[in-house]
Image (cartoon, rainbow, N blue to C red):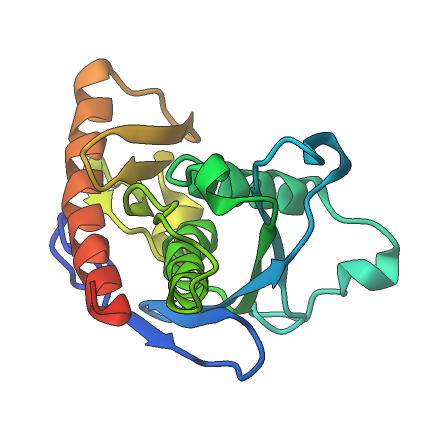
Length: 238
């Protein structure tokens, strides 16, 4: 039995509240169980210097945790004057994941920045950020299309992410903090709505695992991402 009482292939409750902020072109407050991440999409009619004049857009991401998102207060990284390696790694993952489903030529010379702010952390903050990031991105692009600023939809597919791990020798889906902190192995899967894989991060923490265990984690991830894809469609009306 998992600490939460869930079955091995059971997600935590998924919630997605769109239009959570007033000014962003797209926003979503996403919840995976007790984890809460506020995701906003901001549109700018410019691109990074390396893309100027090439007729292509860009999607990037930033990630951060509020000081009391965890059990004890953490210092703001801005107060330290630099981002941690963990923060940089996570925001790069979010940006890469979202770019896999965007046709930059169809987006045109504009940039969409996805800001992911963790309000409450109970495991799976990066996977929630990616999954909510797609919703915010979808809403921002829908706004561009509604205004006639885009003639073709640059978003090619859905993308979602979920964590899996081996806890007490059992592969399980969507780890919360208790499971994540004691798992023998944990992995983050980024999957595309068409069934393809965008990225896998898998690490043995306490014990190594074999190929079959990895495949079992992938099968669990597909179950979880199918639930997330359905929640994304409900949230965006697509």
